[in-house]
Picture 1: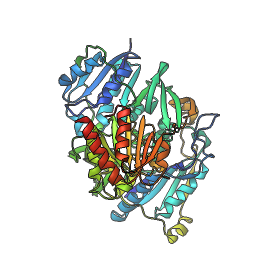
Picture 2: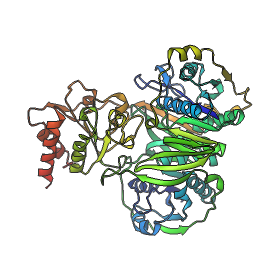
Picture 3: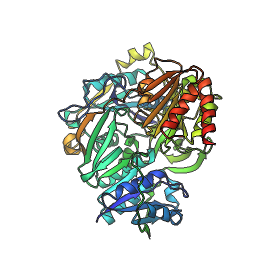
Picture 4: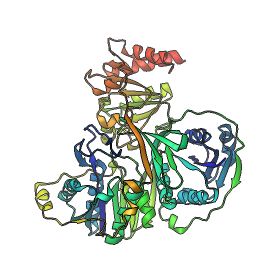
Length: 259
Length: 317
């Protein structure tokens, strides 16, 4: 089984994240770069499925040269090989451009299963699995908290506000995962050493014959008009409980007309 | 005036509040035309009229419930072509965004998600990086597809005809590839939904166990609130995962957020710091969550919360 796991390098949530004044895109230099957290669950799920169903795992990432760090980390967890799509023309791509580029790559490399984290911690749009499924014409199995594969049949638990839906489809498919699905493994020392020798193909747009008019900031379907830092919240009142903390809290709620 | 398509979120009976918020918002830009999938449109008609819906396109059919997302996107794409609306509004929920994403591909349109306000020329306001930055953005290709967060728009009643207009759009097999076999409901009592609730009470690591989450539920019920949980709680299995508030869970923006036993790690703050009023109970005076508090109590939650519940019940009975 040919499994592709998508990973994204994102600014660390613990860093000061901001946009660039010049073009209102993410300021990648301002923050530490880390793998998107939910992608580690996607990698883990890919590895587990590969182990159970005699498959191979290819890591895919689209991003600047520095994203190679995130790809190595994914390989050190046990994936077999990687494809890194990197081209200056991709900078500033929105979800339309990104999904077009990714779908183009996946059509070329072929797949039985594409696995993603359900959203990234930076843009948080949560639409990529749906858009890839639409572009590739394969089933969308998103927000999965459980995945079961039996031959070409795939069944997931799709998380919902009220619980979950049990959803069934036939491979090939696109799956996105939530963190409830598994416990990602830590890379072993052996894994880290082995990752250095694993094949990583670095492709430009020309390499995959993708029209640059489909991607990049200038061809984005949306644009940022302006942005500004939000003012911090006004400091409130903090009291120590001296046996009347609950009453004081109730008084506060009453003063704000919540009770 | 051009139409604004609004996709209704409903469960076949009750219409979600966010749908009325979207209709309220749509009125500023054109004639709100609600798109209703499946059954229940007749029962919802009068309520939709109360918020100024001009029309309701009704696509009755089981396929909208039987398959994941894709049939709804196909319906909307067809309506975009037939009706040439000036925008499509959806709820910025997991499903709403996914429908919007597929519609964006189908119609080669730009999409904006997690929108909290909309002004002239469909300039959308978004809060990014956990509410740290305000962004104004706009769609520049195709029909603007705008996913608006629940609780971001204040409801304003108006009178509309909400005329039901049946539409028939054949759903292709391509949209029927992910079949819903069963919906498994794991409700935790009759409470408002997390992202739509005007009050949310969340428990964190300090709550200590699954059993103790009952205390959080009790406080929530005394306020008519939804229950949330920090990631520590859902990771430990003390409360179901779908109730997680934070960067990898739900983003909420209620009138009142009560954080109990939550230290306020940045991942949690990213999901709640745009709440209008924030109240905190935590035994650690150094907990970063106090930085957000309009009112905070430093103390043992097992003493403070029962007293608070008692006081609320006294005042509201």
